Length: 109
Image 1 (tube, helix red, strand yellow):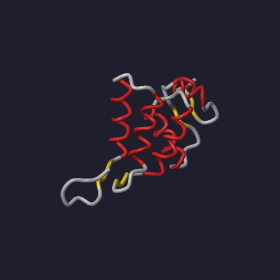
Image 2 (tube, helix red, strand yellow):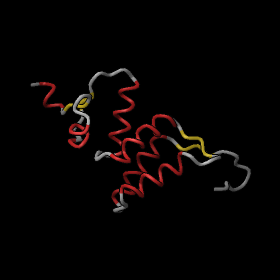
Image 3 (tube, one colour):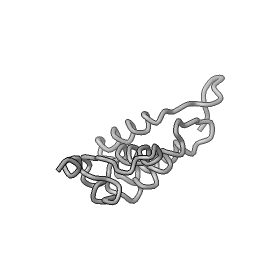
């Protein structure tokens, strides 16, 4: 990928990755295609990605998991922040990671 004009590096925010994954999923792209598109952006020279390591970790989980990409971002971010438990409404994530993720109802009853 080459950048136009005098631009040497392009910055892409973590939020752009989340939004792109959501838009592609709503346009009925397969999970593998979404993974490949996000991974290619993440690893492209001349692109600076905010929170690169967090996105890489979430993408790795997303590749084989069932939850939404945004939920993996939230889970990875909370784990890196030192949280012992994550409350999540994403049942796929709760089922996949019951050791770490709990449905909010389960936490208050």
